[in-house]
Image (cartoon, rainbow, N blue to C red; front, side):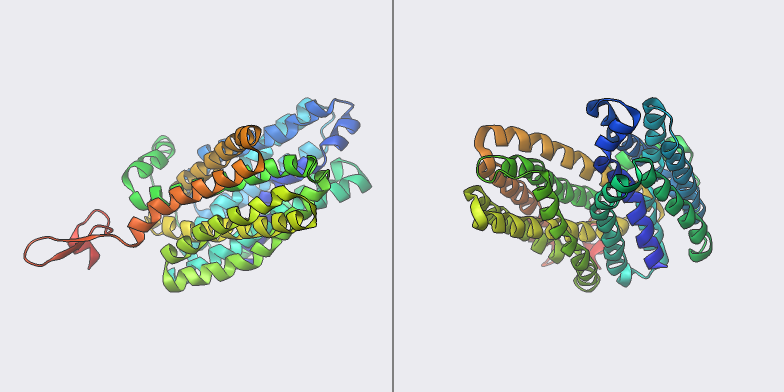
Length: 406
């Protein structure tokens, strides 16, 4: 079942990324400009953002299996419509619907967390994240190769078949679960903001992931500029080759999940944040150019990818433990913060690149990791003070004072 859910995550995430590789083929096939064809990718991403906000909270209101099957079925039909689109407006509309409904990976996480024991959640979430990473990395290669061979419609049609097949498999392979909330839809939509305001562990996890993902996005946004510049003079293919090295994180995330199950999220977060600092130091050597610089870029991005993905496992385990009856709403808040952090990182990275070059981008990554560490260390090693006659109080215990730590 975990394997099927990991494949579901891979297909759902892959639907967001495979259109990026076939933009020129879409432009040629529909006889539009490349800029116009790029609106397909924008529409998919915009639909996904809307799906995160509008649909994922329903994971607490609807039975997970039925909801996931419905999402996969509608995604498959939308992909089929996109593959048969006669013109660009129809393709853009279908792509928006694809993005809106391909939020299955955000439903799978809370579903899996509710099906396994607490001491196995980290390992399972790590496996699911491996599936999402595999879908992200392989989708572009799959669609580009298939599109060159059979035309731009083929990736959409194959993805449609995969989504519809998975919908049928999930019906039989995943056990039914009961809804955890009966609240009205409007209340569910507002709940992620309320949870952010009232749950300190959620805010902490969101801050860690937003800062690390911001650094991650800054590096990958500016890496293409560095490789295309005078230090290297390489094309986009070089970025793709370096990105494939990140596939090693698929192996690391299940291991990180087992460490979270054994030692808790905080030690794993600490190692990951220190790993981001190390990656920033290694990446600075990439400014030199040549074989040594390229090796530094490869190693640095590998460390950064692994630290980001493993930290995400720790953060999600912490988030899901906040409230078992609100995991989808918690996940909405968490993933939205991570997504906003990544967008801000890309924006900041380009501007820092313009002012200070690659060195400035590496410093930005280090500063973001330092901010997360500054937040993490007091939570990991809180001060104690005496309350009453020799009674120590742990300030990290949330909400309930000393008695809540028993």
